[in-house]
Length: 503
Image 1 (cartoon, rainbow, N blue to C red):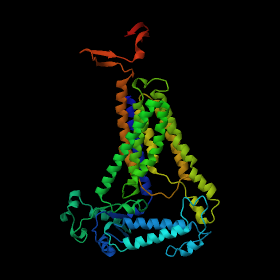
Image 2: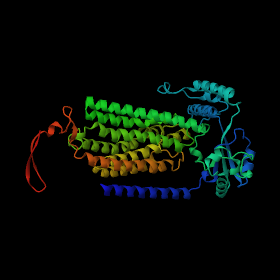
Image 3: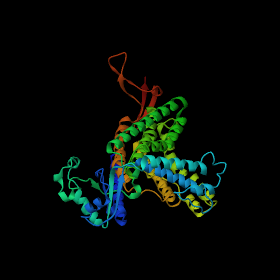
Image 4: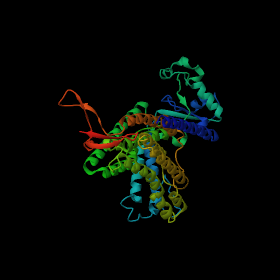
């Protein structure tokens, strides 16, 4: 066991080093906007003048692009909703028809009638026109004329050296000086308006920034995550209670089916909970989703399975013991995700049925975009297999072989789907999830492996024979399960036959 633990630790360490080296290679091989940009996280609320920002940052190099983000979340949401309605109206146009977003009446007049099976799910052209008019009135009356505060500023330089010089010059040694705006921390020319210390960092990729959430403060974001975390824990506890109830009343088979159903529903529930949170970028959002789903999988798939199995049934061969359950769980993990991904019912329907029947090129291209996928869910499957392998590593050594086969199958299926089925229009979230997985989840799985190995050694041979308090006497007695009571004949390691009596 010690040798296997050392081997696993060394293997995980090598994997982490190799993956980190690969990340560095990919990062150096590709030049993106974030390599030339900085983000200001604490600008003055009234700093709306673009020239003022350009003049300040020009001391480090030529400024190519500058974006000032405002506290206009409601306006952005309304404009996004308006664009969705215009897109729906454009999908009702005849072949190669277009829609002028500023004048939709001609498009309403030429719109096609919805098929009968779509009328219950989608609005027709007249309803879309009414919704657009109401939305335009709301935007004009509530959001357009309002004065908005500045929340973030993004500056893109002409050269990467200018970005590095700016970050080095504006970085404050200690956070407390930044919070207190200690002017002595930086020279006057490095303070905005000669007064303000700026909190700067290298930003995420533009495609991963969640522009509608940039106005939320750290306190609001932390409160939201605590709230959704409590809800996630509540859902896990409710699932555990349900599984225990089903096992006690309907048997092991239906308990296993309940666990499978809960694991299938967990990503959807966790996604809805994560949508209640505000995040500055998609990497942070995906990491939050990754944490929630992984917690559900680890508890429901591994910990709960051991909990609902009677202690003395751990090493038995009957259907109610732990070992057959492990076979079933690993085979399910090996096949469930790959089968669902390869089936891709909606993707095949769009590509092979709706695509060839599209009336113009734009609508046909929309059918071949591909299926949306979440990187957090792919990492969740990986860490779940790893955790189950380590959790039952001592009493179920075959789990290492099943885990290796499962990860190999997942790798090739994911690669196929990435090249053939999944969409290529995804945010560039970088290595946020990979770093979290290596730092926390891999390390946590290793710690669980060490702890569970010690526990399993202490529990062997799982016969529940131990000293307990005698309720009728002040002394101690040894008790065993009823099936161990009786007279037995045993053979020692030296070949001697001995008679055993257990009262």
